[in-house]
Every structure is written in C-alpha cells, then in structure tokens.
Amino acid sequence: MLVGGTIFLFITNPKLTSVVMICIPLVVGPIMFFGRKVRHLSRSSQDEIANVGAYVGESIQQIKTVQAYNHQGHDDKKFSSHVETAFMVALDRIKMRAFLITIVMTLVFAALALMIWVGGQDVINGNMSPGELTAFVAYAVTVASAVGAISRVISELQRAAGALERLMELLEADNEIMAPENPQHFNGKFRGLLRINKLRFCYPSRPDTPALDDVTLTIQPGENLALVGPSGAGKSTLFDLVLRFYDPQSGS
Image (tube, one colour):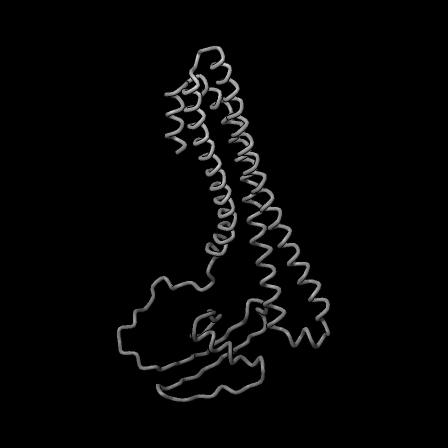
C-alpha cells in the first residue's frame, strides 16, 4: 500500500509529492529513536518477569525454611517489590510504544495538512483541479495509514527483539556436559546392566567436598536395589550422574 500509493502520488502531482517526501526523515527519526528504547525496555521487562518467577519458585520450594524463620512477611514485601518493578518497566515500555505511534501519526498527518494547504493554493490559483487534489488526498491518506501500520509493526518487532536477546543468551550458554571427541557406539542388545566404577563427584559450588567418593557398584539386569542413607548422602546425586545431568571428576 505504501509503495503503490507513493507511485500514484508522483503520477498525480510530483510537486505535492515532493512536499510529502521532505517530511519522511521527520518520521523515520522518531521511529529509530523510540524503537531502540522500546527494545531496551522489552529486554528489561523480560528480566524483571524472570526475577518474579525465580523468587516465587525459590520461596515455594523452600517454604519450610521460610516458615521456620518466620520470614513470610518479609517475603511478601519482597515479592510485591519484584512485581511492582516488573509492572513499572512494562508500563514504561507501553508508554514508549504509545509515544512512538503517536508521534509518527502526528507527523504524518501534519505532512498531509501541509500538502492540502499547498494543494489548496494551487487549486485557488488554477494550477490544479479540485478533482486532482481530491485524488491526491485519497492517495496520501492511504500512504499515511500504511506508514502508521508500519510504525506499529516496527514497535512490535523491537519488543520481540528485546525478548529475543534474553532467549539467545540462554540458547548460547555453554553446555558443561560435553560429548567425547570419539564417542563409542552401542551396537549390541541392551540388557539393562549398570556398572559404576570408582565414581567421584563434587558439585561446582563445593569443589573440595565430594558428594560421592570412590563408589563402586554393579546392578544386574532385573535386579532391585535400594539406596539407603540420610539426607545429603548422595542418593539423588548418583541418579543424576547415571542420567548424565552432571559429569564426574573421576570414575565411570
């Protein structure tokens, strides 16, 4: 619609079209300026929403600790603070989008008003017929509406780009579980034999305190085996290693 309308504008009256074209840089400038701000605020909004989710998940997961220290009131206030911050950032983002669309539409229709004034002078002076001016205004309104629609699309794209930056950070994070350079292929029939040999593992947060140390164990196919021990003895850690959520420091 923008391209087609512009072509018809030039065909109808090149002089008035030149007046409209001069105003285009005035429209593009705010789109670039406010578009960057929308993108930045969108990224900040994603971060704040993530903070809310992380805080809620941590509090609920450790609800016994929260209750043991009578921490409910403090957590309520902290949660309200996180939510309010996320709300204010989202509000700023919406305001910025509103400014972007408002300024673009105002500048576009100001250009139309200027064009109608110039065209009206030509009609009064007999250089242009009323029919030509009416057709030109119709094309100009079509072009203006297209520009307004494009500004809304650009605003949405900037919002998506801000959110995409956070997603790309997660997708590009280095994976600590690396495949071996020469992996062995399993060609035989799977039997269900599990053999653990001199396994030693320390969590990254406690590199000097092994959760498992020199564990050797063989579980035959179809065998039922109970792992018994106090909390923190390494039962869940052993399952995590079998599923390869972590790599051990030594052993296999």
